[in-house]
Image 1: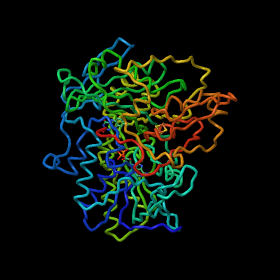
Image 2: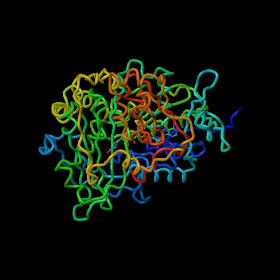
Image 3: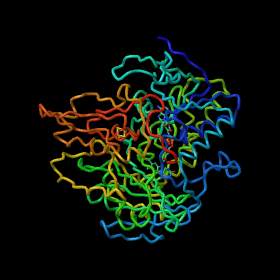
Image 4: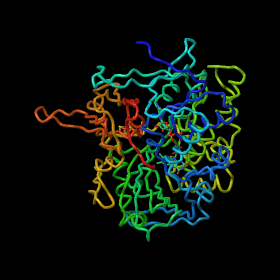
Length: 547
Ligand SMILES: Cc1cc2nc3c(=O)[nH]c(=O)nc-3n(C[C@H](O)[C@H](O)[C@H](O)COP(=O)(O)OP(=O)(O)OC[C@H]3O[C@@H](n4cnc5c(N)ncnc54)[C@H](O)[C@@H]3O)c2cc1C
Ligand code: SF4
């Protein structure tokens, strides 16, 4: 059946900082250029999860008058603390002098990135951009010559077994002279494009972390608006893993806290969710949360390979921007400003191309323009931070980063390598003892189900499962015996369960797809790369209020 289509000059997939900044910039430069943005969340911001300490450099360039326009940057950073957690009780505060300068936050703001995106969407609409929330781009459409023609949104009203229900509505094609892919970390279409156009040829594998975050309302007397606390070490190092935590005091007596677990961990018995629960019991953290109430929960993968892992970002008919292309600066644990800048540079190139009456060709000049931008330059200067953390762990890795970044300004004449993909790192479960995580106390620590409840996640249940297994047998024949099926633990939403049949005693993998918070960890960490995350029906997924 032929699908309906609409034509634009530019189609943008994803209403995050990269996609929205690109959309705004295009219309600022030329209001004749038609632009649409499709967003899979129920509204812009619903699927956005970030820390977030925000560096306003790109926003200053995009909207120098953002204050007058009411951008939701309400909390300036007032204090920066970094601790090494040495055990469940002990800690060491790192003197300010020894902190890598990328971790200093003077001039930055603690924000809800979801709310900033909502505001950016308002600015984009005021500039004439058409934004379609509830529409998930499920397919890339190609011209006969192989260049990208646009995207198709997913069909609605298809039942679990593929049958069309009464509510069936076919997807729609959106054609553009150029299509910008801004799906964020581990984009579903971005992954296909990287493969099709071999955009990662000659690059290091991409690396990831899983960030799990909560928002708490705390007693007013405990609240220190503007305080930023980061930690490294315990609890992850107890199980040989790396990562770090963030805890920020934002406005309205709210404290956000989260743990990022480096997905290069080797022990398949590790559970990032349970590590996060016990982290909150450390005295350094507990003092900020105790007596408060947890109000929101969510999780999202973070892309952290840096320039060594960045794919080529241009191909015939399209560009990859933002975290879809890995633009995050891991040395700062910040990617919003670089994602926005990559989108703005892309916008400038696309507007020039359209002005020259080009269409669907390869905007190769984007590579040079991005390279000349401050976004690329800061990633270049801090390129060794991530590999050093992998090679030597958090503590020695940070000491190396101090020398490389603070003393040599990133000018040391080498580039460290991190050549093993995260999914290849897992070792057999038999090499590790069981980890007995403490039971949640329902005051500071909680179970997965009550947590997912707070993410307001909702999917139409009668639809094809959006977590596709290439081989249905692998979870039971390979993953269970060898790795004790790690999906049971790395998924922060309890989607994957091994169920033992009562009568036969056989095990099977149950996929509770309706709980999925779209973090993308299963697509990244499955040891045999057997799981592919595809978009579910538009609007499905979490409904984060202010993550
Ligand atoms: C735990 C955590 C903490 C972080 N802390 C910070 C911080 O303190 N400071 C900072 O600057 N950065 C931080 N980051 C990184 C920052 O959030 C990202 O770099 C930034 O959000 C990237 O922007 P983006 O527009 O590329 O992607 P995203 O913000 O991920 O936005 C992508 C958008 O595209 C939509 N989308 C995806 N696929 C489709 C599709 N197929 N069809 C339609 N819509 C689609 C998504 O729903 C989403 O709205 C953090 C990230 C995490 C996970
Ligand atoms: S199913 Fe995959 S993408 Fe969904 S929450 Fe679990 S790990 Fe994340």
